Length: 319
Image 1 (tube, rainbow, N blue to C red):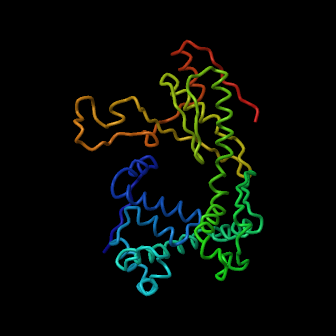
Image 2: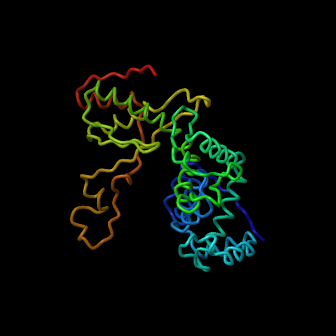
Image 3: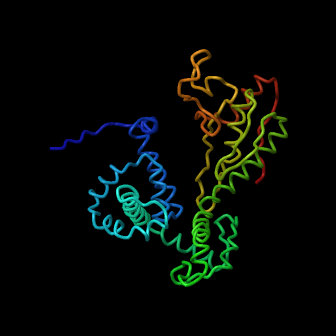
């Protein structure tokens, strides 16, 4: 008889577990599934993504058995050429991952009502107008679609067209872009606004630190150490919009990760003298920094003024 005991677990306790096994592996697989399928990945694309995670063929066997999907697995094995697209497609590996990918994809789309319809709607709009537009106005163009022979009912390249032979990969790429653009660029509007507002204050306060790059919903900056706490608080405050139409009260908070490329222990994971060159490097590098907390902007300014003998002031900028 299975006995279930209730235990108290805070959100902080739960978050701490994400770096421990097996939760770390589960989280990696779940993130791949969530991001890939939310952006409309096909079963074939998702199969490739799943193979690059810690999900194993043994996990596939267990999942197929759990879902009673032996018939689907056999159907894929019997039609390898249709699924392989000329690549390697082994019965004991790719066929199993393909079966699992199809099952997970259908379950994911069924579990989020409206997602499948949204992807189809974006595809239809892109095929008709050769661009997609997100809620906040940004546009992504797909001009190549204007020169392809596309079936308006199936939203796929016509089987008898030359495009089917020479442009199928490009068409798949454009359809992925059409489904992804509105999601991926949704945060960009606020990131760029935060960048501009933060940069105005950085110039006004004559700071040494600078923001130099953006990737979707992230900002990259090089930071002078005495300005670190101030910069974290500044960027966080500048992207923390108070009105995100149509969802008022939903705030965008920054979660900073700091990589100290001049710190020996940060780069190697070892103290000076401990590393001989043979040990495994387990330090943090650019894009894999250590998570840090952010202070309220007024507290960060007060500490900076005291440390640097400055008198900078915080003033809300007009949006």
